[in-house]
Length: 526
Image 1 (cartoon, one colour):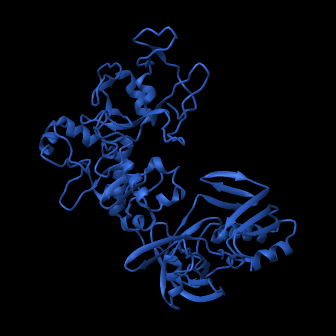
Image 2 (image 1 turned 30 degrees about the horizontal axis):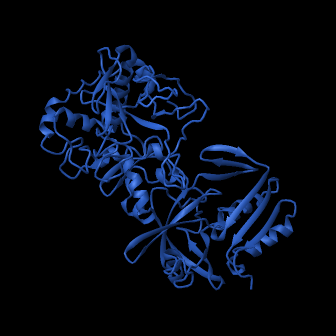
Image 3 (image 1 turned 45 degrees about the vertical axis):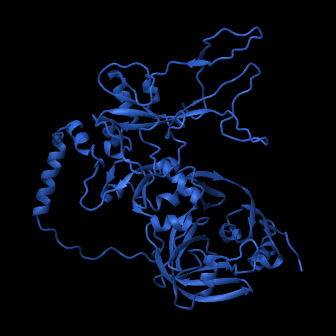
């Protein structure tokens, strides 16, 4: 119940007697008793088997060289939900459904809601006493009333509007399935905008709403790549960055559709809408305000009736306001372009004022955004300047991948060639910061929010990936009290591809006890 950290031993029974060799050529039946309240807060129920030689099933699905698939853990996903009657419930979704039936959490068709009632078993929380889960894809068991308080403590924020399966339950009560491609849940943008932080990040892509909370820790670009867009429609940016595989993965987190103008939140689509509304439980009466709340409201009303004198002066403006905004794309014009080699440029972009700084923490990066041939293109870059030495501007060192030069990429780099085409005064847009690694100084890092300390750093970089390492090394060497030692191994295709070599060679000479660098090439050294 906890991702494999601990396991509960099950009882095994064999319906048929063993052969004379002691083998059971029959189904093995496994059973164990788990109080339903122990399942509250559980994301997944995993089952694995051991044999007498202590061999066990692997946790993930793999294929061997003979093309045969292994027999891995069996996983049933558990999702907290709210039933049509408004009570707390748990929904169990199996990987697939029997035979040719579609559904289950492994089903990745955009037209199917992985969190829906298909291939699922529901456990509802009610006042009646309940037992185990009965057989069948849509049967239900009820939590004992004594378990409700414990369940409420584990799920304090559960509410009908955040559950993708609430509308599925309503559709089931109405005796009509929700149309393919929609969960039946209509969500207003006002509600989506409330889910704008890491506690419950929702995004909108092509009119479909996704709850990305469970993917925060697994996102390759770090959780900030999701949270900076939480609560907004990110269709254009999502399409600009992600592959078709990523778009299919997104469907696992689908919870509903954006309510169009004139539609009401929570509408169940199809002919079952009226029936579902009729069978839904009546809304609970609004609680009476507590005495202190009433007093606060009265005080607020009195205060609003009293004229408030105007402030004597506006709040002081920061000496160096920051430019980056995680929720907005900020336009910045090109100030200058310097050729460092035949295919490497240093682009300098102006910030909104001469006093502005970029506001990028050391170790993090930003998105550079531009329209190319009418389509949004976004790429992640790390500036070589910092907030200390880049007041009013920032620099990007970029290798230009020209069309027809690298056989593997005959069209070249879309963004790098666009930057190369810019004239002085042309603008791009930037957005950030993002990234799950930040250097805090004196050997201290924040990695996905967890602080780590190091006295010695081994750094590996390839090609343009040197820029974040360059940024961290620059910050370390700028602080005389930072005694962190660095060893950098920098690989490139050819000698001509090596970026920032002059600066790093100068550091190695100036700080021989703190900075060491080696270069490797995989191509011709001529």
